Structures are given as C-alpha cells and as structure tokens.
Image (cartoon, rainbow, N blue to C red; front, top):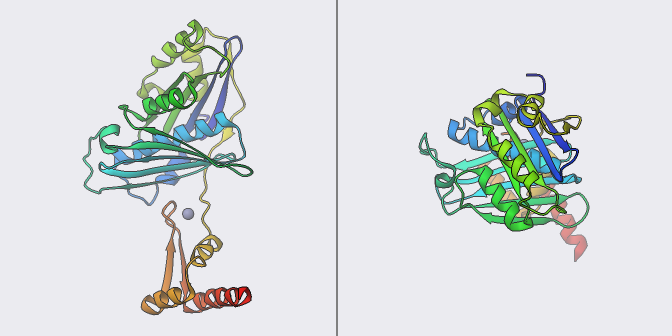
Length: 288
Ligand SMILES: [Zn+2]
C-alpha cells in the first residue's frame, strides 16, 4: 500500500460537501507497542485515532485535538490526541477482564464522548455527546448533528495492524438533506470496514466517487510522537509541596514519573528531588 500513515482532504468540485480520508499503519503500531492491549481495545483505539486525524485535518487550526470516550463498562477511558503536525498518541484504561467480544456501546456503558480543541493561541473549546449509538462512527455523526447541525458520515475501521477512516460532511452553508448530500452519503455507506482496510486513499475515492467530480489534496504524514519529557515531569513534581516530595523520596529512594501514553519513565533520585525542593523553598521565601 503506497499511502500509509497519511491523511488527505477530499474536495468535491460541484457539491457543498467536504471530506477527509485517513490511513494509519506504522504510526498505529508504534502507539500500540508495549501496551499489550487486547484486540478489542486495539480496534476501538485505532478507530478513535483514525477519527481524530480526520477531525484535526478537517478543523485546520494550530493546536491539539483530544477525543475522549468515558464510560462505566469494561472500559473507563479511551483517549486519543492529534496536533496540527499530525503527531498522535493514545491511551486506554480498562478492566483486564474485558470480554473478547464486546460492542462499543456496551464496553463504554453510560458513557459519553468529549471533543476538546486546544488551540496554541486562544480559547479552549469542549464539546460533549452521550454515547447512545452502537459504534464510534455513529456517535460522531450524532455529535456533529447535535452540536453543529451538520450532516456527517463516518466510516471507521481498525484490525489492530492498521486503522482507516473516511468522513464526509456538508459545508455549513448548505441545507442539510439535499439530493447531493443524500447521494454522497449513500455512496459512502456502501463501503464496508473490510474493504476500507484493504484499499489505499486514492482507491477508496475512486471506488466511491468515480462518477463525481472530486480530488484528493496532497497527503499529510501522520506520526506517533509523545509530548512527554523530563522537563514536563519535573514541572508536575513542582506542583507538590517540598516536604511532601522529601517524604516520598525518603520512602522509596526515587520518584518515578511514568508516561501512560508511551511508557517512558523519568526517574528523580534523592539529589534531583532535593534540588527541586530547594528551588520550591527559594521561590516561597522570595514571595514572603
Ligand atoms: Zn510519553
């Protein structure tokens, strides 16, 4: 497959509909590496990653997009992030006894979907929809219908090795339910998950819309990149109290700050912690 790990916008010439098609493979495998997720978790997390790269590309802003699903079933949290450079990461929190076969709605029982837009400059925005549909794709369609009254069609698929997705959405100016939208949405629905997983972006477009006037924008590369660092871990430690920090390090000899996204570990020994504590105390003294 030629265009793995690429996301591309779709332009229709004569119809007020926009689209995005995405493919993740080595980025997906890097994100999953070391987590030992069961297949049922890999598949849903992969679909969420496909969705977040689509949404980030569709929104065109500088910053970070976070898609979270929270529930009270076997899965408590699924969280995926993508920034405008298409750097992605993901994490899942779930009951290890999760059944091998379980539906999206059931695993996230009494759940909701949260979409957070964190621009580098300006206001943070958060949107929310209860998880009342049988699949992530349907929940996202529901989200856009409720929050922006925009007709949207999602097809998402993941087999653990690769994740793929396509989204079509009416432009805000267009009246929903027009013949053009109905036709394109119906065409998109003819694509099943197996087919989507087997085809590259260009072939997907040809397979669905060869009778339409449409084209793909140039591809943008998707990669796995975690935003964690020793500096960020140190910053988090500095939110604690110096005495509290000394107590922890006296007990265990070291403070380990693990990253839940990439499994990196940042260790702070007695000397490191003492330096942090002195800095905190100097700051406190300067204030008073
Ligand atoms: Zn990390």
